[in-house]
Amino acid sequence: MSIVALGIIIAIKVVVILAIILGIGAYLTLVERKVAAHIQRRPGPMVVGWHGLLQPLADGIKLLTKEDILPSSANFLLYNLAIVMALVPASLVFAVVPFGPEIHVFGYDIKPILTDVNIGIIMAFAFGSLAVYGVALSGWASNSKYALIGALRKAGIIISYEVVITFAALGPIMLAKSLSTYDIVMAQIHQKVWYIFLQPISFVVFVFALLAETGRVPFDIQEAEAELVTGFTVEYGGMKFGLFPLVEWYVEVLSLSSILTVLYLGGWSPINIPFVGFVDPFFFLGPWSGFIWFIIKVTILFLLVLWLHWTLPRYRIDQITTIAWKVMLPLALFNILITAFIAPLLRG
Amino acid sequence: MAYIGLLSLLAVMLGLSVILISLNWLLGPKKKEPYKTYPYECGVPLYDDTAQTTFHQGYYILGLLLLLFDIEVAYLFPWAVVYNFLGVFGFIEVFLFLVILTLGLVYAWKKEALDWQFDLESL
Image (cartoon, rainbow over all chains, first blue to last red; front, side, top):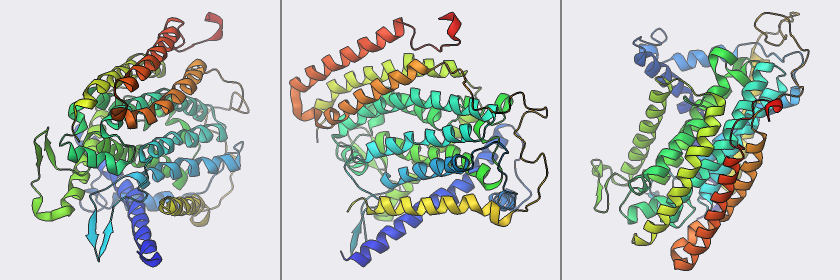
């Protein structure tokens, strides 16, 4: 493969990831507002475009034409660095997400994954835990009590669930015998089983950790609207304010849902009957059906997160850390023990 | 070679975040008013001039435990990958490791290190 072709392929993949972060991320705000509205029996955005379809564009223009304000006692460098530290690591997680099977286009075999390395899962967790810096810096730099309290709460949640999420992910790694995200999906296809059927405990623990790391209900105490008026974003305005929810509520939920799909739901594989095989209603699409299945799974996970967000109350911060250390961590350790017994029984 | 894609995405994202940060300064109005940059405090004057003082948070020991458990999970990742090729030996070794790890967690639990430390006086 020539250098030019390699460059073009990498450029296309980077553009696709950018489209996911900015385009799909922005339109998920509309999805969230519509779902929230219908859960609460009201229509939601209806004015801009058909059923509010142009609402994200209107929001974007409004955010961009606001005045650029630096709070009088804030630290200029840290105040802006916080946004970079929030946006960049969260979007780098998408570099290790395999969106589909290997496809054959214009004489090239292309894997739809930006960096297919043998430590993909570890890189995803590393970038995921860097997210705390954005929040912590924004809380410290904006020099407001509300922002500081919110940032410290977020740090408390992250240090609790970072341990839990890595221990939970050990189960699928033991079954797949690989740390590469692409190989984990291939292992599930070869063993003809989604790991959710073998790792139900670990799946539940991972979903809890996903909700906590992305600041979703019932673990959204760091931005509790009623007491902290959205916590660490309180001193930000305009597009700077818009980026924090975009990153935390949409980009991170999408990236962690993709990792969860890869680990437990068989990535791009069709509907699974455990140990028998796969049933693919989209067989006529050939290898492209994989992309459809990946999108369907991530969509279902995202709607599940929205459903929880708009129906549950929130926990107190000390209850959140207590759940992590006293319930989730023992469960994850127990799951590793069970997996150690069932892993040798799997073929392939 | 595999990391070229990651590095190019990193460069693109860094550039994009700088652009997004400066767009408000480019497009927005610029009107100076005395109380526009005043920190938010529910409409009353600030109680303290700065928020960057000492602040009590209840999870200092949890932060220490995070360091220990994150290092231990880093040891477990290589074992998890090659577990199926190690046989009984690998299982017993890591079983002992996990038992010691769990004992540490139980010790921290008994010492109430996993609870939220509400204030220093009650300890």
